[in-house]
View 1 (cartoon, rainbow, N blue to C red):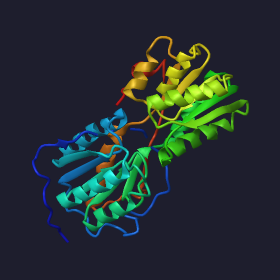
View 2 (view 1 turned 90 degrees about the horizontal axis):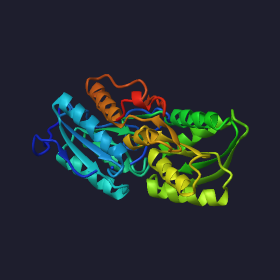
View 3 (view 1 turned 120 degrees about the horizontal axis):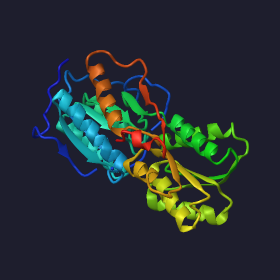
Length: 326
């Protein structure tokens, strides 16, 4: 049945301050598979889009805005962007605000994939579609994200080959969301093929440069015999680069990351940097594809698989000049 909606105030795109990390694989789930089930109604048309990101201070999430703007323009829809600042309670409040505004489509990079489920159920009950990006969200109609396992695999394979297939490495981990867990799993998958690679240290950062530097400094102090470092995203990897350089080890330790961020690409072009590669993500494309999936649902053509993975490729010092970036 058609539903009556309040339109978002104003025709202009509304963007509030936004931002960080992240993407990966998960088991496909039925559309609207949260406790409350599918949306009570599917919108007749997507006239309003709400984009919710984890932390706008991370350029990864800022880049999502471009994809949302492109998608909204294509549909002639209004856009409202909200930054959770890594706060689940704030993300719950933001979804409730979108419900009150009558938003047709919510695209969310969830701070907590399980904790956000009740809010997604409320959105479904109000007739909104919910598509997750970058990391799964329980109950979402679909999720579009980087193949995070593949990202971890291609990053670590390149690192292991560059250090000669043997030696000690450090792993700079992050917050325990699924996309990061999958990146680490990808690295561990590759390690099975390199029996002479050993993990000398494994600590979690807060997904940013400062904490990446701090945990790397601690690990290098405890285990100085290290030849390589895997940072599970570019900010943590670039923090590891700082720690390596502060220790005077830039000539004997190599560092890789994941994101394909502008900062990562720039670092690959800096002379003398120990940073040698980054596995790509495409945050803007995630959002564009998320809106396409939602439109397909509105048109009565829901995806056969509700987990849509975007491939990850390695960008190195040799290939960064050809990399289109975010």
